[in-house]
Amino acid sequence: MPRTNKATLTLDAEIGAAIRSVRTIKGMSQTALGDVLGVTFQQLQKFESGINRLSASQLIVLCKALQISPMDIIGSQFDQPSDLSGLAGQIDDLKRRLSDIARIATKG
Image (cartoon, rainbow, N blue to C red; front, top):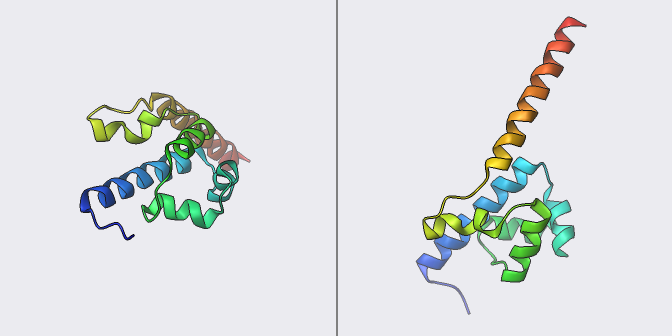
């Protein structure tokens, strides 16, 4: 049966976008995350685009693989901010490392 409820379609797309964002920040490929879930990268693309829905158990496995809480993905739907401060710290650390690499490369 086709899904026609606009509210759920919008939620599926927002959840998928959040997954894509965190996966990208974590540096994990669609293939690698798909392998953890036992699905192809094409199926993961469908999750991330909101075409297909994840089950609750798939969301939990996905979040464990990304080392985040499910609320980091769905919290905004409940007006709860996600706790991605750990990710922000990782991003800052990566930026510092890249800056160091660039500085060394220009000296050499």
